[in-house]
Length: 98
Image 1 (cartoon, rainbow, N blue to C red):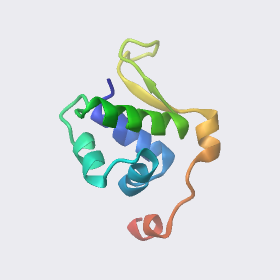
Image 2: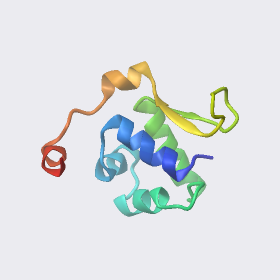
Image 3: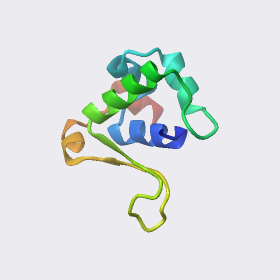
Image 4: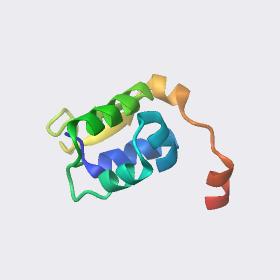
């Protein structure tokens, strides 16, 4: 399972907003928002979680499980080299938000 912080981090690494993630995964913006505001582990039905994880994997996100080799030993998320090449270009709304 993935954590809410991992989900927010994955979206940040890709440089996309909730609306863009909703389009990639075929889920609603409200579903993405609910998942991102979970206490710890993302809650949702299996189909929604599968669609979300598949969309993020295809965009170049790799989720790191707890206990995987790392200095701190916690959960994580990383952008693969392929994902870095696909990373979304900043949008006009991103520029206005900055």
